[in-house]
Image 1 (cartoon, protein in one colour):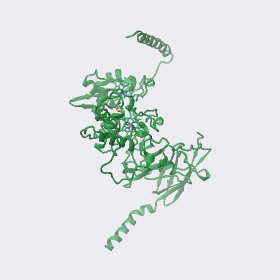
Image 2 (tube, helix red, strand yellow):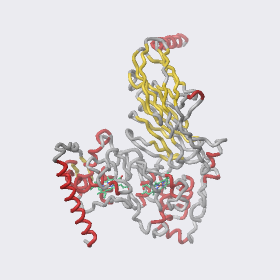
Image 3 (spheres, chains in turn yellow, cyan):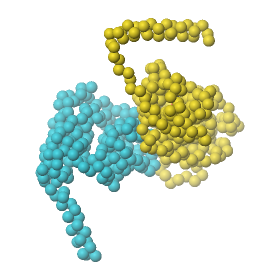
Image 4 (cartoon, helix red, strand yellow):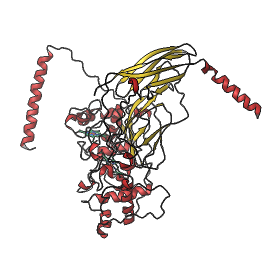
Length: 313
Length: 233
């Protein structure tokens, strides 16, 4: 512990002491202060592989490790929440970002468990990887006591992800065409730098400003909120990031096309080295225009529907 | 064949005969005071939509007409009507056209099918910000089939498109089929009300709700009017 941190702690302790005395002095004049209602911990289970989590067993862990941010009542209003951007999740509405399930459905126990293992990058949500599997499973069950949805609904059916095809220039070029056609660039920007024409106006469902993901910023793989593998990226635009402007594209992208899009998105991470950037560099960084071998008879996209600048030429 | 047809006609007449003694409520929604001026919308970032409007349109939060009439007010039976569970088999439809929602306010019954389509040449993301029901958010590019959804619980749900921040509308999920949305002259009509005591609620997205009690005794038409106080901001 360095000196400034120790000092901070000491003053915090001092303040708490003074505060405590103050409260006592006042308490003589105001004898009855209504205690806040206590949380009713309904017995709820979670199932992570063979491990069964129990909400009652996570009482003290939640109080000690989670309540400071997520709040005693799970509403995201813990005492630290005012200092934090993005805000801690409100468990009472049961809307989650990292799901394997379709938009608008509950995540699976595994989804929540994986979030606890991973933490959420670029937020204050830590990775709880020093906990035992049992502790985390118990906490997953505990999160569910805050919303009645968990009693009435089942988690959604996880979206199916086919095996990943090889990374080819064809695949990347098709992915780029999809990025333009599906208008990802309106939010993420033509080069995926989070600066599209709609970016500045975006707010999340609690009216907090939110930025679209900036692909170019990442030095490595570590900046995705819901997992860093190609499968995680596939999943994220098919499920959407619920509670944010990032929509689900599951109804409009065919499974194999989705892999092409993943391959193109990887080339937007210009500081990252991977298969996709290797394929790109053998072509001297030029993505050829995509030619559809069997064009559908659909009506062509109008001219103004093209990304300004159109990705990396 | 012929007898079958006459039988059919006869029986439908019988069935609807209960409605022959049903009453109705008609009325007008107006406002007092001065509503805030609706801001013009700048659609220049979406030329394919901008060119669909000869003159720039304004926001639709408050739409007024001649003689202080107020449009887009949902008037519905909030107590007294007993048609819980009778979910209409026909879907209600909601379109995205010229980067606007048509209609701006869409009432529906709980669990009724809702069909959302996109008539524009641009992608929209349709994002109803439900709190009681579940929130979801889907992309709908041009030329894709309608999105079908339903809502289980009563709720007034703001709808938005994050790509086009001016786009804004409402899903109004009700537990009754007795509703109407006030038209350009502020008028509304609730037909087919069997005799009984009812509470009507009128809801406007910026001006809040009002209620009125009404008793229908037979095949009569009752007049009920609502007046909202305009907010100047």
